Length: 279
Image (cartoon, rainbow, N blue to C red; front, side, top):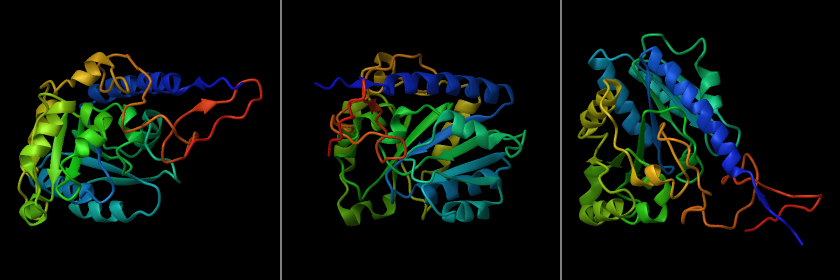
């Protein structure tokens, strides 16, 4: 007989504690973290390029930290905006954690930085449960990904404080149904704002920057129902520690377990009994 012990909750609680400390430290120096989550290929880097360029043109002191499994291509692109940019290579780890972010800041982040954009590892599963000390969590989806994306990844979208649709310039060509997408977002996260953007045309870019600056200025970000109740993965952005088991629909309940995997899920064996591996 095999008994499975779930360590995920303990890991997340410890991460939340570190994230809360980091958020407090950054707030004391006037820096607000904006955490960007999306699937690969959503246009997250292109939008961030546009946000950094716009901020630089307005004289807003910003910086960006971008995380990838491998290559420094995104940092090379983002650095063209002329702002501080740092690449984090996770060597296969599918998400960032608060202490990982904390370790990158010392000696790099300029004191005057008002907004620190964090481009999280590209997926909508692993990063969803990890608070990085952000004050604004932005979840992106492109018009090519399908209107049901919020329903497929309810944890990511359910904990978003701002939802951004990218590549709006091709929405008509790909038959994107905006009303259906908004309705699906409302199902998992009532009241969250949805902003349509096109990095190519520059539309919506200013709205995202304004939302981030408003939060940096003290405006309270949207508080998702899921975060208030801890009904899925628990809590983000300082709402309190109410972690439930993170088996939302998007995580399913059958996973390989281990750090560095596409889905971090720490179920460990007890009394020498091997952990179960599901596929």
